[in-house]
Image (cartoon, rainbow, N blue to C red; front, side, top):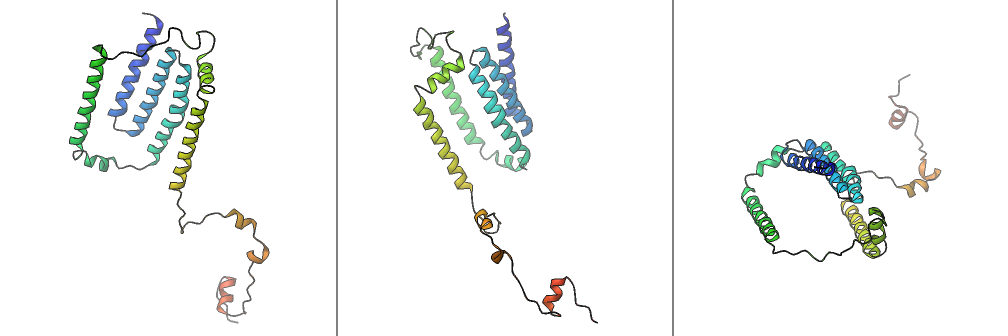
Amino acid sequence: MNLAAVFFYLFAGLTIASALMVITTRNPVHAVLFLILAFFNSAGLFLLLGAEFIAMTLVIVYVGAVAVLFLFVVMMLDIDFAELKSGYSKFLPIGTLIGVVLLSELVLVLGAWFGGGVKLASVPSAPIPKTGTLTNTEAIGQILYTDYVYYFELAGLILLVAMVGAIVLTLHHRKDVKRQNIAEQIARNPASAIEMVQVKSGSASFSKAVGGKRSEP
């Protein structure tokens, strides 16, 4: 057994073990940490396949952003897990039914695959581009920004619209919350910022202005 096979079984075993711990552990923080470990080992498998771009994307995007965001959300929110599990028995039958349907579909797909009923699409005889001419990342960038540049820009536009829509839907202006109005602050002048009040000496308003009651002579 060569070194590559040893690392493959190591990364694959750790990935499966981490995935099982994600769904079996009771502590949500530990579940997110095991998810990060599964992402790292999956990145190792992609490196063994020669797909370094996908491996680095998995580490940077999923571990550096998504999983860390999950961890912060889980640690900041005070979730009552006992209340969440209270309706477990009520939804158990429909959950079991969905699980049986998904398991049946997987069995049918795997049975057709190993039985020879599914045929692979035609694979080109030579890789495009040829091996050794370009690196993996450079080849992906050349194809992405030439042949599929319009689809790439369209995907970015869709994500931008979705982000703006999410901000608009969640941004509610409440009347009981004070907000900063920069234009109003810049337009302030002494006439609108200062109010001169003539208070008669000895009155109740004068006592409040000086911070106490007027003492008798």
